[in-house]
Amino acid sequence: MKFFVENWVLILVAFVSGGMLVWPLVRKGGAGGSVPTAEAVRLINREKGVLVDVSEPNEYAGGHAAGARNVPLGQLEGSKDLPSNKALPLLVMCPTGARASRAAATLRKAGYERAVVVAGGTAAWRDAQLPVERAAEAAQVGDKSSGKASDKTAEKAAEKSA
Image (cartoon, rainbow, N blue to C red; front, top):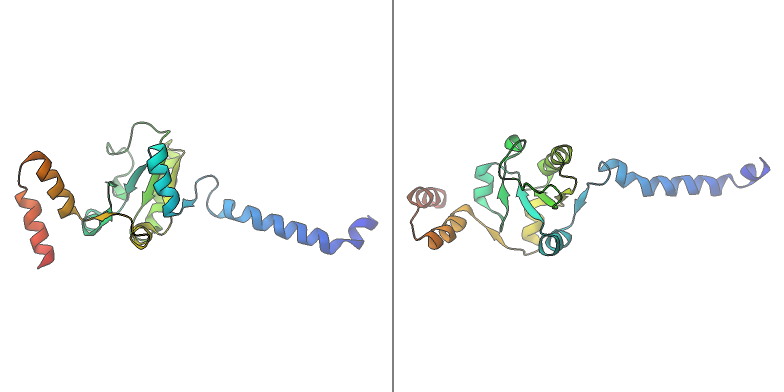
């Protein structure tokens, strides 16, 4: 007992520092959390990570990370656009990252244990100067590969630019 009385300051410092180490895990819900854009790129390149953009279709059309799949937050459960292999890392993003954290939690409950949020969302992706495409650009790439012109996509792009 004498030890605790004489060293109460050290014991307090130990508890506070331990709490500071545990706090990020408690705040972010455990193993999930978020990853910076550099880590997201590493997961995509080395572990076949899949980018999932949970933005609404109009936000997605305005600009998204190249190669991202658009699965709006409201349509996330039971979506056929999600990979069937639940062991792959899922990198969830939206314009700012706010919706992505809810989506990642939903995906983890659905069995995608490696679902993580890309910190900062599409804005951070752009700031890191990583490839961003617009829906019209993505459609043009698809049109070139199929040899067909998409009239509806061209009309929508013209309306947005006007």
